[in-house]
Length: 141
Image 1 (tube, helix red, strand yellow):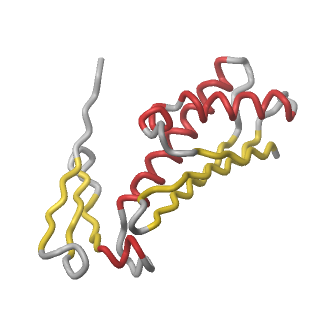
Image 2 (spheres, rainbow, N blue to C red):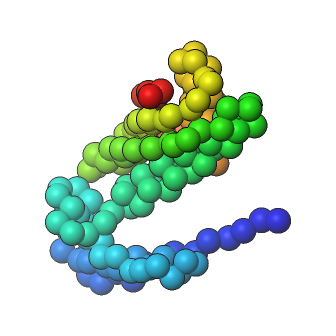
Image 3 (cartoon, helix red, strand yellow):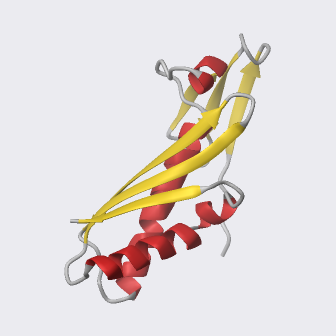
């Protein structure tokens, strides 16, 4: 069964001086301020499309890695993933770097590296972001 998730954004004004609010409609967990300066400069308590992509990617990747490891008979104790999305004004998103640290009893470093790469390639958010370079640092701890 397919699911559809919904977010909406209300924007006022022009790009450089305007501001908006993005609401996570499906979950109802909140609305967040967004602006060009929070995207192209410092966040200053506001979010950006890139931060929202990073949140989606880090959570999706963690789920995909956890699932792959469990399917292979080595379920993880913990998986901690950070996604860093780089945005360059005038160019766009120039890359995403995933850093994963996991505790996986019974799995060696080579097996973990292979599982981590497979999750990077096959997580639905990675697939949706094809065309963007995605790099990975995987640490088994």
